[in-house]
Image (tube, rainbow, N blue to C red; front, side, top):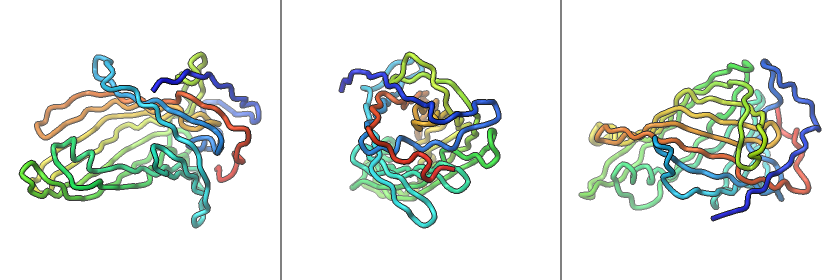
Amino acid sequence: MKLKRIVFILVIGLAVINCSKHSLPPTPFLLLLQEDARTQYVSYVTNEKKELLHAMDYIDRNYVRSDTIADKIVHYFLEKGQIYGFYIDKEGSLWQEVKIDLAVYALNAGFTYREPIAFSYWKPLIKRNKGIGTSWSTAAQQTFVVYDSLNRPHTLKYSFEGQATLVGWAEVIVPANRNNLMKTIHVRWNHFSNTLFDLTDDCLVWQQKGEAGDYFDPEIGLIRSIADYTITKRDGKGISRKSTFELYLLIAGAASKEKSKGKK
């Protein structure tokens, strides 16, 4: 899929943002709350030689609606046919709903499966209760059954763990606005891991482990996410990879949702 890059222009003169070392604007949403906007990201993975390992994947991620659930306003976006949620809580923390198919992880570890294995959890992308320098940890896990090449069942435990820090301001360039540095809120994932452990054979069968960084434009939301990691399988051999997910195209809609709604 080839799309002509469109350099977008956003007027951010509506609010004066104090960009000093020790202050940040209100927590940004994950993406623009505009039903008629088009937001597209490009995703790709490279090896140690910076060689592209697969065709670039162009991903549309567009806002669809907001609902009030309990004491929070949850916003939803559509990506590859699935609906995902995100919200900002009373403390100004940004949370995103993560949905994964554990069967894909099992396949990478050499197992077979009989149907998709859906799993979801909420991941804190930004926390700021202590301002710049705020650190936090997050984790999620799930057990499920898959089959080996001899059709024997194995119970696997999937686990995600991460530890992050709100670093502050950082300047980045993304394809959607290649000619200009963009001032962003930087979250550094000091370490993260996705792990599959075989409870039946009592051994590690697959792990992705490394560090990452997320970059949020105060008005647009997430514009870049990068990760450097090592993948280790049952044989213990590791391979290094780098993944990139960044804003490729943004066509702002004619009318936007009230930006202050639900922000802290």
